[in-house]
Length: 452
Image 1: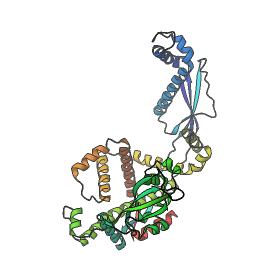
Image 2: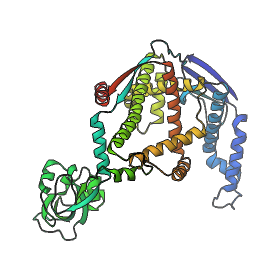
Image 3: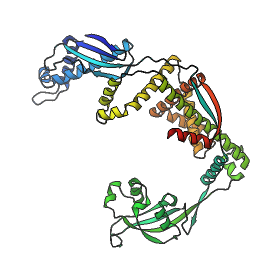
Image 4: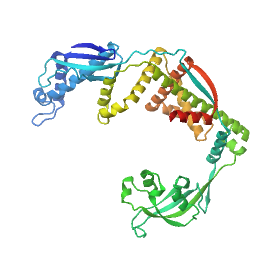
């Protein structure tokens, strides 16, 4: 076996692997014997099929399989030994055709194209500067949070007349075209949120009382076919067989009564007594907003840094190789035209990935198991707080952290987030930051303009 590399340019290389029969035939013969031992063919006892018969029947396919395994192993072994940083995966060369006859084994020659990772020079000098925003909550933010707390802690009370924003349970009865009840038709009860309906459908219900009925088109009372099927308790693919005309009868009307913002509610939300008055609640909301807005500011800073580095860092890529590779790995979903259209976004994403990897490698950035656990724990606490559970039991949280650590996809996601955070912390320490104070309204106005 002989492996050689030809440099096409700084970003492209070609590797040629030459195989002789002595390289691959021993393994092929071994596999033929294994197949003969396992084969079950008419006229032969199990395990007694002659190797020659198996070779005649399966020889070429076994040869192809074993040669391909050997090529993959040796190619990646060579890439590792030579410390080649490649992008994507090696592709069979389009310029140099491979030489192989799987019907008559002899010397074989296989040639692969490689896309090489570029060298990157980061400039984090005096021009590496950004605005960093200190965002303050407005009174409107605080009042909106108080309103949400009041609603989340409220209770549903039954009424006899429908008003805007009520939750209404109705019985659905399928009708014939003449308005009569369809024999064996749909019969089901489900709830409708009045404030989610279109104006015409909402107006038809507001003011109606318990027990009243009206004829409607069921498609006016849900946003999509998945919800429609659930509403009528039928399968989605059965909707086309259901008549659109239905009689609905009002069975229950419920209205949310917001909770009073008083000491009783605050004690329920904060059993440790840290919040007992409305003023303390407002102070807590502002504190929570400060933490949230800090993350929003960090998110904008990260975006500004990423955009700046992608734009101003010279990163040459083997574009034609990568386009060919993208078509190859997604051949069932992507055409050359689609890849060409989407390539600019892919290229920018790859540039950022290469920049980030360079920073991680050169600064020896690592994420420890303890940092991983702490990251998962913080994420869980944030989720609890979102759903109104401000103080979670430590033992329960520890148990959930252990469960998360057994989910490979979740661990990988958190690991990536922590690496990303550490990279951004390094960039932030290197950047010249111009701190600016702004309220939340102005901040989001600015973001909206940037995105439009």
